[in-house]
Length: 272
Image (cartoon, rainbow, N blue to C red; front, side, top):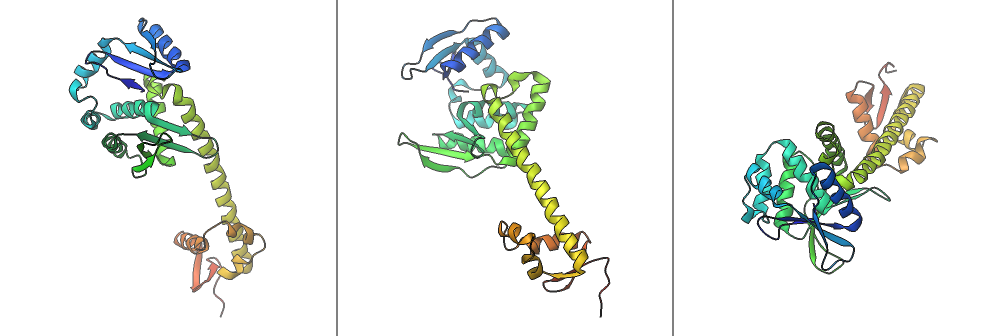
Protein backbone atom coordinates (compact mmCIF):
# COMPACT_ATOMS: atom_id res chain seq x y z
CA UNK A 1 0.00 0.00 0.00
CA UNK A 2 0.92 3.67 -0.54
CA UNK A 3 3.41 2.69 -3.19
CA UNK A 4 4.46 3.97 -6.60
CA UNK A 5 6.42 2.68 -9.55
CA UNK A 6 8.58 5.55 -10.85
CA UNK A 7 10.45 3.21 -13.20
CA UNK A 8 10.13 -0.35 -14.45
CA UNK A 9 12.61 -1.80 -11.97
CA UNK A 10 12.03 -0.02 -8.66
CA UNK A 11 9.13 0.50 -6.31
CA UNK A 12 8.70 3.17 -3.67
CA UNK A 13 6.69 3.04 -0.50
CA UNK A 14 5.28 6.41 0.54
CA UNK A 15 4.17 6.66 4.15
CA UNK A 16 3.87 8.90 7.17
CA UNK A 17 7.20 9.07 8.98
CA UNK A 18 5.98 7.04 11.98
CA UNK A 19 4.92 4.18 9.70
CA UNK A 20 7.92 4.43 7.38
CA UNK A 21 10.27 3.73 10.31
CA UNK A 22 8.20 0.65 11.13
CA UNK A 23 8.37 -0.49 7.50
CA UNK A 24 12.14 0.09 7.29
CA UNK A 25 12.70 -2.05 10.41
CA UNK A 26 10.42 -4.73 8.97
CA UNK A 27 12.44 -5.04 5.75
CA UNK A 28 15.72 -5.02 7.67
CA UNK A 29 14.66 -7.67 10.22
CA UNK A 30 12.80 -9.99 7.85
CA UNK A 31 14.83 -9.70 4.65
CA UNK A 32 18.19 -8.42 5.86
CA UNK A 33 18.19 -5.35 3.60
CA UNK A 34 18.38 -1.68 4.51
CA UNK A 35 16.12 0.22 2.09
CA UNK A 36 17.01 3.72 0.98
CA UNK A 37 14.91 6.40 2.71
CA UNK A 38 14.49 9.97 1.54
CA UNK A 39 12.12 12.79 2.44
CA UNK A 40 8.97 13.24 0.38
CA UNK A 41 9.22 16.27 -1.91
CA UNK A 42 5.78 17.71 -1.11
CA UNK A 43 4.83 16.31 2.32
CA UNK A 44 6.97 17.19 5.34
CA UNK A 45 5.60 14.28 7.38
CA UNK A 46 6.18 11.52 4.82
CA UNK A 47 9.16 9.50 3.62
CA UNK A 48 9.98 7.70 0.39
CA UNK A 49 11.35 4.20 0.91
CA UNK A 50 12.94 2.73 -2.20
CA UNK A 51 12.32 -1.01 -2.33
CA UNK A 52 14.97 -3.09 -4.16
CA UNK A 53 14.09 -3.82 -7.80
CA UNK A 54 14.20 -7.55 -7.01
CA UNK A 55 10.69 -7.45 -5.53
CA UNK A 56 9.12 -5.67 -8.50
CA UNK A 57 10.71 -8.20 -10.85
CA UNK A 58 9.59 -11.09 -8.66
CA UNK A 59 5.96 -9.84 -8.71
CA UNK A 60 6.19 -9.30 -12.46
CA UNK A 61 7.24 -12.88 -13.23
CA UNK A 62 5.35 -14.79 -10.53
CA UNK A 63 2.04 -13.02 -11.19
CA UNK A 64 2.63 -12.64 -14.93
CA UNK A 65 2.13 -8.88 -14.73
CA UNK A 66 3.05 -6.53 -17.53
CA UNK A 67 4.96 -3.61 -15.97
CA UNK A 68 3.56 -1.30 -18.67
CA UNK A 69 0.02 -2.09 -17.45
CA UNK A 70 0.79 -2.00 -13.73
CA UNK A 71 -0.88 1.41 -13.29
CA UNK A 72 -3.99 0.41 -15.21
CA UNK A 73 -7.17 -1.42 -14.13
CA UNK A 74 -6.05 -4.46 -16.15
CA UNK A 75 -3.43 -5.22 -13.49
CA UNK A 76 -6.15 -5.44 -10.81
CA UNK A 77 -8.38 -7.62 -12.97
CA UNK A 78 -5.44 -10.00 -13.32
CA UNK A 79 -6.05 -10.97 -9.68
CA UNK A 80 -9.53 -12.23 -10.57
CA UNK A 81 -7.83 -15.16 -12.27
CA UNK A 82 -5.79 -16.01 -9.16
CA UNK A 83 -6.76 -18.11 -6.09
CA UNK A 84 -8.72 -16.61 -3.17
CA UNK A 85 -5.63 -16.07 -1.01
CA UNK A 86 -4.06 -13.81 -3.68
CA UNK A 87 -7.28 -11.80 -4.02
CA UNK A 88 -7.45 -11.37 -0.24
CA UNK A 89 -3.85 -10.17 -0.14
CA UNK A 90 -4.47 -7.74 -2.97
CA UNK A 91 -7.55 -6.37 -1.17
CA UNK A 92 -5.56 -6.06 2.08
CA UNK A 93 -2.84 -4.05 0.31
CA UNK A 94 -5.42 -1.82 -1.35
CA UNK A 95 -7.17 -1.12 1.96
CA UNK A 96 -3.80 -0.31 3.57
CA UNK A 97 -3.23 2.13 0.72
CA UNK A 98 -6.66 3.61 -0.03
CA UNK A 99 -8.87 2.37 2.81
CA UNK A 100 -10.34 4.23 5.79
CA UNK A 101 -11.44 2.06 8.73
CA UNK A 102 -13.37 3.95 11.40
CA UNK A 103 -14.79 2.45 14.58
CA UNK A 104 -15.23 5.46 16.89
CA UNK A 105 -18.49 7.43 16.71
CA UNK A 106 -19.88 5.07 14.06
CA UNK A 107 -18.34 2.37 11.89
CA UNK A 108 -17.27 2.44 8.26
CA UNK A 109 -14.83 0.71 5.96
CA UNK A 110 -14.47 2.95 2.90
CA UNK A 111 -12.16 2.59 -0.08
CA UNK A 112 -11.40 5.82 -1.95
CA UNK A 113 -9.77 6.32 -5.33
CA UNK A 114 -9.50 9.20 -7.80
CA UNK A 115 -9.54 6.73 -10.72
CA UNK A 116 -13.05 5.33 -11.16
CA UNK A 117 -11.88 2.44 -13.36
CA UNK A 118 -9.48 1.32 -10.63
CA UNK A 119 -12.28 1.29 -8.10
CA UNK A 120 -14.55 -0.60 -10.51
CA UNK A 121 -11.84 -3.28 -10.75
CA UNK A 122 -11.61 -3.39 -6.93
CA UNK A 123 -15.41 -3.76 -6.87
CA UNK A 124 -15.01 -6.86 -9.06
CA UNK A 125 -12.49 -8.27 -6.56
CA UNK A 126 -14.99 -7.70 -3.72
CA UNK A 127 -17.75 -9.41 -5.74
CA UNK A 128 -15.48 -12.39 -6.43
CA UNK A 129 -14.99 -12.79 -2.64
CA UNK A 130 -18.77 -12.42 -2.02
CA UNK A 131 -18.25 -9.25 0.02
CA UNK A 132 -21.28 -6.97 -0.09
CA UNK A 133 -20.62 -3.29 -0.72
CA UNK A 134 -22.24 -0.06 -1.83
CA UNK A 135 -22.29 1.29 -5.34
CA UNK A 136 -19.40 3.57 -6.32
CA UNK A 137 -20.25 7.16 -5.44
CA UNK A 138 -18.72 10.33 -6.80
CA UNK A 139 -17.76 13.01 -4.27
CA UNK A 140 -15.70 16.16 -4.00
CA UNK A 141 -12.67 15.92 -1.74
CA UNK A 142 -11.72 18.65 0.75
CA UNK A 143 -9.13 19.83 -1.75
CA UNK A 144 -11.83 20.29 -4.40
CA UNK A 145 -11.15 17.44 -6.82
CA UNK A 146 -13.46 14.51 -7.67
CA UNK A 147 -12.97 11.28 -5.77
CA UNK A 148 -14.77 7.92 -5.97
CA UNK A 149 -15.74 5.87 -2.95
CA UNK A 150 -17.41 2.62 -1.98
CA UNK A 151 -18.34 1.28 1.44
CA UNK A 152 -17.87 -2.37 2.42
CA UNK A 153 -20.91 -3.39 4.47
CA UNK A 154 -20.50 -4.48 8.09
CA UNK A 155 -21.29 -8.19 7.67
CA UNK A 156 -18.70 -8.42 4.88
CA UNK A 157 -16.10 -6.57 6.96
CA UNK A 158 -16.74 -9.22 9.63
CA UNK A 159 -16.19 -11.99 7.05
CA UNK A 160 -13.08 -10.23 5.68
CA UNK A 161 -11.71 -10.08 9.23
CA UNK A 162 -12.24 -13.86 9.63
CA UNK A 163 -10.65 -14.59 6.24
CA UNK A 164 -7.63 -12.37 6.98
CA UNK A 165 -7.13 -13.95 10.41
CA UNK A 166 -6.96 -17.38 8.78
CA UNK A 167 -4.16 -16.09 6.53
CA UNK A 168 -2.37 -14.56 9.52
CA UNK A 169 -2.52 -17.93 11.30
CA UNK A 170 -1.16 -19.62 8.18
CA UNK A 171 1.50 -17.12 7.01
CA UNK A 172 2.16 -14.75 9.92
CA UNK A 173 1.16 -11.21 10.90
CA UNK A 174 2.32 -9.63 7.63
CA UNK A 175 -0.57 -11.32 5.82
CA UNK A 176 -2.88 -8.91 7.65
CA UNK A 177 -3.50 -5.19 7.32
CA UNK A 178 -0.13 -4.15 8.74
CA UNK A 179 -0.51 -0.89 10.70
CA UNK A 180 -4.28 -0.81 9.95
CA UNK A 181 -4.90 -4.27 11.43
CA UNK A 182 -5.64 -2.80 14.86
CA UNK A 183 -8.34 -0.53 13.37
CA UNK A 184 -9.95 -3.58 11.73
CA UNK A 185 -9.84 -5.54 15.01
CA UNK A 186 -11.44 -2.64 16.92
CA UNK A 187 -14.13 -2.26 14.21
CA UNK A 188 -15.09 -5.92 14.65
CA UNK A 189 -15.11 -5.64 18.47
CA UNK A 190 -17.65 -2.81 18.35
CA UNK A 191 -19.72 -4.76 15.85
CA UNK A 192 -19.74 -7.92 18.01
CA UNK A 193 -20.93 -5.86 20.99
CA UNK A 194 -23.83 -4.51 18.92
CA UNK A 195 -24.72 -7.97 17.58
CA UNK A 196 -24.73 -9.38 21.13
CA UNK A 197 -26.97 -6.55 22.34
CA UNK A 198 -29.32 -7.01 19.36
CA UNK A 199 -29.70 -10.73 20.13
CA UNK A 200 -30.41 -10.06 23.82
CA UNK A 201 -32.98 -7.41 22.89
CA UNK A 202 -34.58 -9.71 20.30
CA UNK A 203 -34.85 -12.60 22.81
CA UNK A 204 -36.35 -10.23 25.37
CA UNK A 205 -39.04 -9.05 22.93
CA UNK A 206 -39.87 -12.64 21.98
CA UNK A 207 -40.27 -13.67 25.61
CA UNK A 208 -42.46 -10.66 26.47
CA UNK A 209 -44.76 -11.25 23.49
CA UNK A 210 -45.06 -14.98 24.23
CA UNK A 211 -45.82 -14.37 27.90
CA UNK A 212 -48.60 -11.95 26.96
CA UNK A 213 -50.14 -14.36 24.44
CA UNK A 214 -50.01 -17.26 26.94
CA UNK A 215 -51.60 -15.15 29.67
CA UNK A 216 -54.30 -13.58 27.52
CA UNK A 217 -54.86 -16.72 25.43
CA UNK A 218 -55.85 -14.54 22.49
CA UNK A 219 -54.44 -11.11 21.59
CA UNK A 220 -54.65 -8.43 18.92
CA UNK A 221 -52.03 -6.08 17.50
CA UNK A 222 -53.68 -3.16 19.27
CA UNK A 223 -53.46 -4.92 22.65
CA UNK A 224 -49.72 -5.42 22.23
CA UNK A 225 -49.13 -1.92 20.89
CA UNK A 226 -50.77 -0.48 24.02
CA UNK A 227 -49.14 -2.89 26.45
CA UNK A 228 -47.35 -1.14 29.32
CA UNK A 229 -43.93 -2.82 28.71
CA UNK A 230 -44.05 -3.14 24.93
CA UNK A 231 -45.40 0.32 24.19
CA UNK A 232 -42.08 2.17 24.57
CA UNK A 233 -40.01 -0.56 22.91
CA UNK A 234 -42.29 -0.65 19.85
CA UNK A 235 -41.82 3.10 19.34
CA UNK A 236 -38.21 2.33 18.36
CA UNK A 237 -39.30 -0.14 15.68
CA UNK A 238 -41.07 0.04 12.35
CA UNK A 239 -44.87 -0.16 12.07
CA UNK A 240 -44.57 -3.59 10.46
CA UNK A 241 -42.47 -5.02 13.31
CA UNK A 242 -45.36 -6.88 14.97
CA UNK A 243 -46.78 -8.11 11.65
CA UNK A 244 -43.39 -9.51 10.65
CA UNK A 245 -42.84 -10.92 14.15
CA UNK A 246 -46.19 -12.76 14.11
CA UNK A 247 -45.51 -14.08 10.63
CA UNK A 248 -42.20 -15.47 11.87
CA UNK A 249 -43.80 -17.03 14.99
CA UNK A 250 -46.66 -18.55 12.96
CA UNK A 251 -44.14 -20.03 10.54
CA UNK A 252 -42.37 -21.66 13.51
CA UNK A 253 -45.70 -23.09 14.71
CA UNK A 254 -45.72 -21.09 17.95
CA UNK A 255 -48.93 -19.16 17.32
CA UNK A 256 -51.93 -19.39 15.02
CA UNK A 257 -54.09 -16.73 13.37
CA UNK A 258 -57.77 -16.53 14.37
CA UNK A 259 -58.73 -13.62 12.12
CA UNK A 260 -56.97 -10.51 10.72
CA UNK A 261 -55.04 -8.84 13.52
CA UNK A 262 -55.97 -11.47 16.13
CA UNK A 263 -53.81 -14.41 17.23
CA UNK A 264 -53.54 -17.09 19.88
CA UNK A 265 -50.90 -19.38 21.37
CA UNK A 266 -51.09 -22.73 19.56
CA UNK A 267 -51.48 -24.82 22.72
CA UNK A 268 -54.83 -23.16 23.46
CA UNK A 269 -58.03 -24.40 21.80
CA UNK A 270 -60.34 -21.92 20.11
CA UNK A 271 -63.38 -21.22 22.27
CA UNK A 272 -66.87 -21.01 20.72
